[in-house]
Amino acid sequence: MNYEGGGNPLNVSFLTGIGSKRQREIVHQYALNDRRALPPSGIPLGNIQKGFQDLSLYPSNELVGLTFPNDYAASSPYAPYDIWADTYNLTTEFVNPQQAHSLASMAYLMAMTGIKDQSWKPLSGQISFGSSDVLPGTAASASLSASGLDLSSAQIVWEGRGADPFMGNLFQVTPEFLGPYWVEAEALLPDGRRIFASSEFNSVAGHHLTVISASQLSISGVAGQTFTLQTSNDLLNWRELITDVFTGDTYEFTDDSGSGEPVRFYRAVAAP
Image (tube, rainbow, N blue to C red; front, side, top):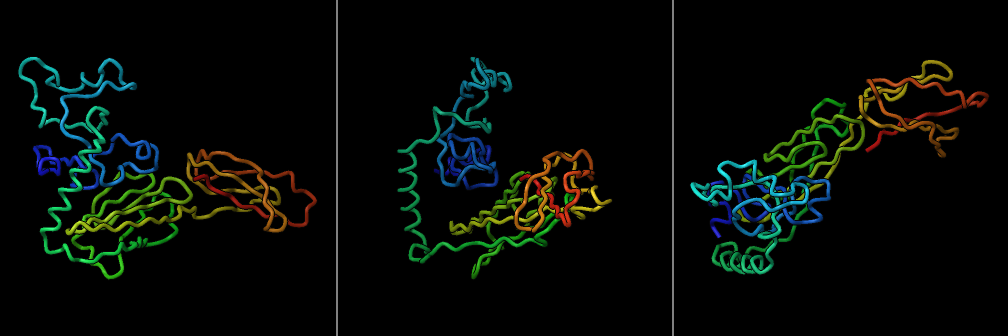
């Protein structure tokens, strides 16, 4: 249990959600297809393995050629317990009996501590941003809090759109495009309790739309950002004019379809 909990030469835990160096690729369909880089917490990863599994994306054991000494070397091989790679392996992971044994063992150990009688109801965390609207290229700072709890000694793991997972009390995301940016946090308290929170901020342009003439507009944005320009006569019913991609920080558009109308409104909607 100590070895699989992270007490090994690589300081890597074989249980997701604990430790300072965490596995990302595991045998888990949801984890491989959601928006996060890290998998859900509490999933066992089996144990040590001699080498890479023969994956369809890397046929004929192509990954084996990336390691030296060779994992399957007949002489002077590298010790298996000193080897770690961030890749899933169907032959050793997601072992249900092992998960049951681990749960029973951890429950037994927990019952031997002073917190066995501690009542606990999950609390919702709150993520606070320095500003809810942030310009592209400007860092947005986020912090986590929970009512009635001191999180100063908690291990907090952050994830966000376009950002690598980060461990620390404060998290910064620098948006590249316009639109909503999600941020999530998971705090692990010293006694094993966890706090979760999810929120988002908006990446906005300094000037959305500028009227150049009666039929010409200038739209502010970020190169590479997809947007949709919409128009309305009553601010209630909107229809799409164009969908395009910014090639610079501004986009100019001439609208010849609104001639003769007494009033016309425009708005630019950023793609997520």
